[in-house]
Image (cartoon, rainbow, N blue to C red; front, side):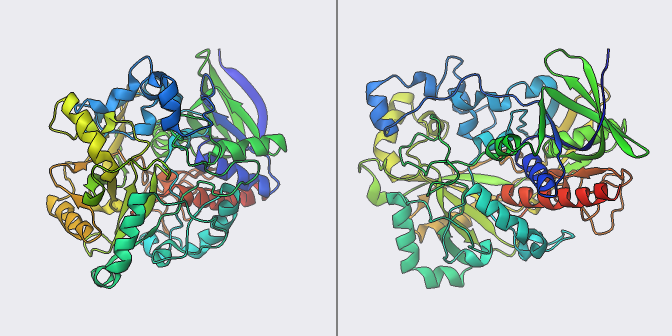
Length: 537
């Protein structure tokens, strides 16, 4: 029996990830109380408090359940046959992030590995926290300019708490207004930045610039959230310094500016006259449900929103595009640090960025420099041609000298993947056969040596398509939409006057800069437009 919810909601937002919460916040700012429909999986238990450096903690207590877990999920990346995913998604703390996704959203994937989440807060529960403004050069091929996003970037910078600095990357990253002080650099990152300063002219002449990346990590307390404590516990303990959209959602709930209804998987919609009928399934009972709204905003994640739209039209023939940032993982070494003590006082994720202005990949390729002090050792073994015992000894002496440079390319560097909904409800995903050319990897390695970083092409690993988890382009916005599955410049779906797309699906393509902050800014812009239309009836 279908559960009827006869009330007509002013606006229904699907999803509680970055785009969904940003859209809901924009509605609230316009005086409209939106309803969020969400599966909303939460962790079964809170991660522990670790009041000291993780290395000191590990000397006194077993860390097996924190690092590996009873189901050995922490060893996922150790198997070379598994497509590499962010190590954060393998540690037990984040097991809930991908829970039930394969069960409720079945996929058939080839040459691609798409990560999906039905968690409250979405994939931002386990993200790397990179937070960048797009500027006009990043928006080539979009129907909007950066000035249309700037007011939302300003709001989000204050709400989230983003750190960064005025440096050589400011022309590429945009305004520094409202930024908190940058994260403290670890020893390896300090040495890279010093080397850049000494060779800056030579590197700049070749289109290479280095500076602080921007991240949604507090370096100063904000709204009851703590500053980053420099304890190497971010992957295992309870920390509020990393932004999670759940923080904004909970604030909206406390002020009664949003309704949140978890436990519902939205499957399709139907637009009729002056309302939208939203068809869901209760994930606990399996029973179908229906909700009604004047306006529907889809923010379920690019892949999930594409599924919902195709299912709404019963379309099992159309193939939609899916963009991601092709990525290459490059373990790199500072020879002078081999055999030194491991630096455990810095920040364990990325702090520096290297921008390479190469004409083949406009506007640039971005390399993020990740420190390795909080990465589980199992992450490195798949790259090593040694036995486990030899590998452990190698890691002990070499890890203090090691960083991982992840090269992110614009989504146009490779053809997009394809998305089709089969009649059996399985989403068919096919990645491109093309790969990032080896000569480009070698070019980056040569440049990086000028920064004191020594990497080797045989250690470089091209991520499987989808591995960056930066998804976009399934339902792109256009100045003049031509196709059934394109949107206007405000994200309104062609032929569906009361349906807006607010997540990555609406972004036509991606710069090499991680897109989460831009995703949120655009979601706010889209939602404000939807509110204006709703206000006119």
